[in-house]
Amino acid sequence: MTFQKEKPSEDSLSLTFMALSDPTRRAILARLAQGEATVKELAEPFDVTLPAISKHLRVLKKAGLIIQGRKAQWRPCKIETKPLEEMSVWVEQYRHLWEARFDRLNDYLNTLQDEGDESP
Amino acid sequence: MTFQKEKPSEDSLSLTFMALSDPTRRAILARLAQGEATVKELAEPFDVTLPAISKHLRVLKKAGLIIQGRKAQWRPCKIETKPLEEMSVWVEQYRHLWEARFDRLNDYLNTLQDEGDESP
Image (cartoon, rainbow over all chains, first blue to last red; front, side):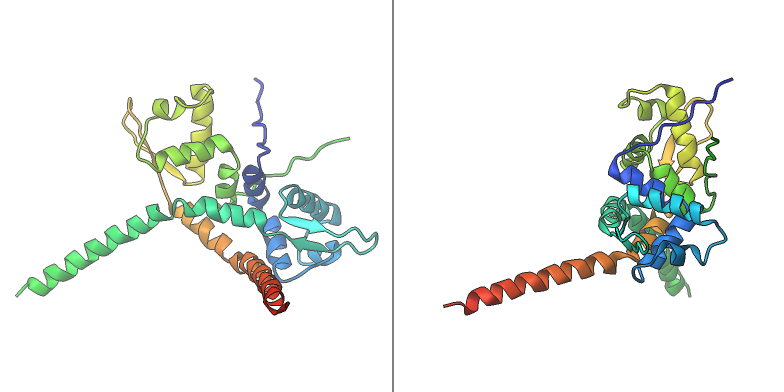
């Protein structure tokens, strides 16, 4: 039996979602939201090797979520927000769905309250 | 040389991002945002086989983004917004970063404008 692996999608939104589907990469991004950091600094809080961190950085770079300076010894990484902004626009189109759910719940709670007020 | 594949993360946010990293799965979700649909209806607009669609649905179900009814012949799929809401909360924490960028651009444009006003 052969197992056919799904080919990863290469459009920018797919690359962003793929890059964010790992908690270590999300933690790296959270760190970079505080300011620039070197690969060594980024690796410190994690129980992973430098090559493993470098691999995560490559995925984040491919998605355009970070950029890395070119100075040979000290190559600080920096967060880039454009893909996050694009993702935010994407998810906002669904907001009305969960807000509608809250509205229905609220209406229901108000009905219960009214019924309570009307009882003797 | 051996290539070690990254083990997919199984926390809910990672599963959501992974499920959304494919344009067909995002299109399925966009369709279900309009209302319930059967697997056959979901497959129609795509140039893929029913088993391929079923595989996409399994990924979306695992992430909790859709639920599927249990009626044997007609198992309509329905969107579930909780993971999208969680994702929205996650991305919102970065909004200040791109808004700060717009503010700086705006300040710069105002400076240019002021300089223009002051010239004879």
